[in-house]
Length: 543
Figure 1 (cartoon, rainbow, N blue to C red):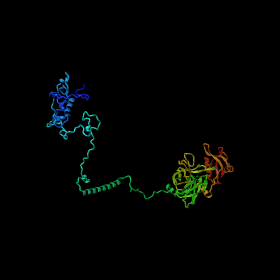
Figure 2: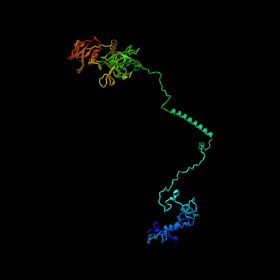
Figure 3: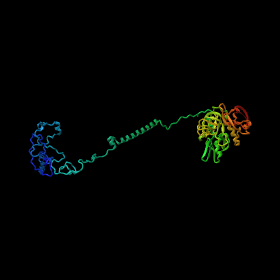
Figure 4: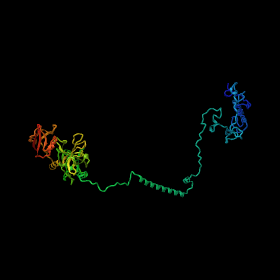
């Protein structure tokens, strides 16, 4: 059985009942029931509870509708008030109802009804005051007629959102003529002529500022200075006679670079011009490729850069000396000195083309004199040994054949070999370590003159083969064999003898014996100091 407060679509509606009398004033809920006092008796509302704009009751055409609403939502029969009575013994019956108080003046002023208005609700001002034939809906818009909240009997239906997008706001900018720049900036208070004057003045100020800024920037820039010049003295540096610069300036034009080429192979060395006819002294190992290879070319390059083809005049493999000739008019000739006048400690200058770097000058001193140095033999049956000048002036491959000059600028030796830490290779492929060797110019002069005159040179020979030995107290050259009919054989030298002296020169090794004999010319007689069986002997040998 359904409650009198519910509505069932499958049952008959109860008959409409007349509105019961209003509740007594002492009802604590008076004026709040849901029967005819709210739906019918309140002035200014229709059967739907809406304000109709009139103070009278609803229109007669809505009587059936009102009866249905009263049947559905009215007070059940037998109910005397808005709520059902409490059960007997309810503790709330003993409570004293709260006394009604008048609202405060502020609340009454803010939320109270105006004193000159009789109706409880008011319409907005734009709503017509009288009844309208158009049904009113809870929501506005085209879809208001399908609003499910308009009629409780309407079916549920999905629709557009309740709040519609209002869209972009209309452009309400006032229309009118646009303001000019003068009106916008100065409000029409500046004449056009004054604007022109201001523009000219601004241009002048900008130009002056730019010039001042440019001058200031140029004056404060310390990095670059386009007009900078460096002070220069008029007089050149005064160099004393015999200085390295003075000597190099006089000798460099007489030193040449020698280039030998044969296909893809070749080498570079140095040479010294020794006479005005174009004769150049160099080392034999510098030009040996040109002497043995018919396809090889030989060329001399002067300090000025001029080139001239050269020809070999003569070679002496025993002393590693050679002479070549160039056809050049009036070449600068080097001055030859005396190596016998050198002393250990004298300053010397090496000039040549190390590693092809023409005109290189290095300095040093005479480290030792009469130092026997064995060179690499290029052919069999050759015993190349030189009685060298040792120097610490830097000498490197390519210096071979160059000049070693003293402090006067005179040539005292021909640079030939060096010693390196890489081994005893006299070619010195490891580079200079301060152990350079030059052939004394006194020996070079004799050999070069013979080569220029005859193309060859004849050396003196003792006629023995020897090795270096020592007994702990003295050193010497022990004879291994004696050439029959030679100078040593005629002097009575025997195998096993130890030669310790040639004239006044001590002999400490077999190499020193060779260079000591080569200091003499054929036909000279020398005195040999010999130790035989522990006894010293003195023998005379004619070379």
